[in-house]
Image 1 (tube, one colour):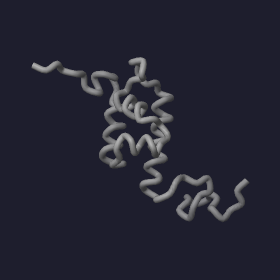
Image 2: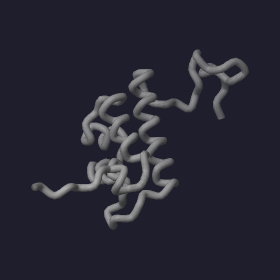
Image 3: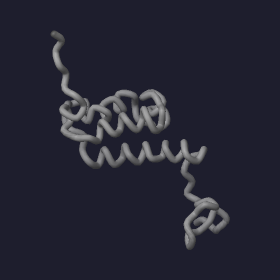
Image 4: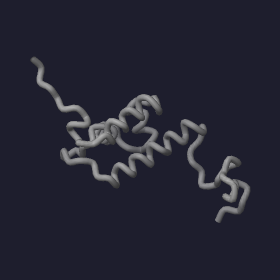
Amino acid sequence: MTPRFPTIIEESGSREPYRAKWWRANIARMTALELADATGYSLQVIYLMERGITSEGKLIRPWAWRRYKMACGGVEYRLLHGHDFDWRLGADAPAGMPRADAQVP
């Protein structure tokens, strides 16, 4: 009988790692290497985030999850809009918000 390894959720005690891996595979449809290239995180960090632990075996802290989510959000923006985020808002800006042709400081 082969040894049973803990699942992602059992190992980290959180659903975040599972969701991160699911998003990468099913929404972004990227390999870990492609996501690493797109976010600037190393391949090792992508794997660790998807396991929910640091290289020392500690749980990923909330601030690290927030940074990782923001990086993945930037990747999703690029996938949805075909370009990277720009500080100037485009034509689809909400009413009352400055547009791209407004003066930007």
